[in-house]
Amino acid sequence: MKRIDLSAVPQRQGSSYPHPFDAPCRERVRQAIGDAAGLNDFGINLLQLPPGAWSSQRHWHSTEDEFTWVVQGEVVLVTDDGEEVLRAGDCAGFKAGDANGHHFQNRSKAPVTLLEIGSRRPSDDVCSYSDIDMRWGPDGITRKDGTAW
Image (cartoon, rainbow, N blue to C red; front, side):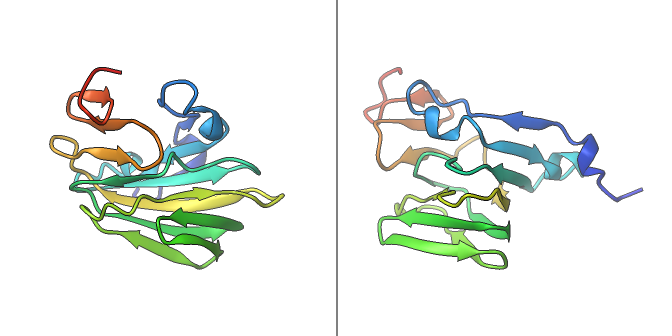
């Protein structure tokens, strides 16, 4: 059977960000539905954002493309270009190497569901964070100058 039973896919709440950068993402819940399908070339997450939650810290990837589709609700996409409201049916893409950091914030009073799709480049991808002194790459979490966190 190829149908994915979402109720059987484990949910991960929160983030791996060090304190205090984890705070805006503590209530987010992700389900790795690409893993549940056994996919290797790209990942797919179903992301639930309760009111007030962020998808991540604002970031960009060196080698990983990302695509996000709003399944339910209304979120604010924050980039270097400013803020955009996205509603159910809207989508956005983020090309690898484009240093315009992005993230989503649920500023509404209702839950939001996002579908996140990204290429899997774990061996060489570096994720840089636009607003905080942090990078995440093959050597783990470091400051932007490469020193240990």
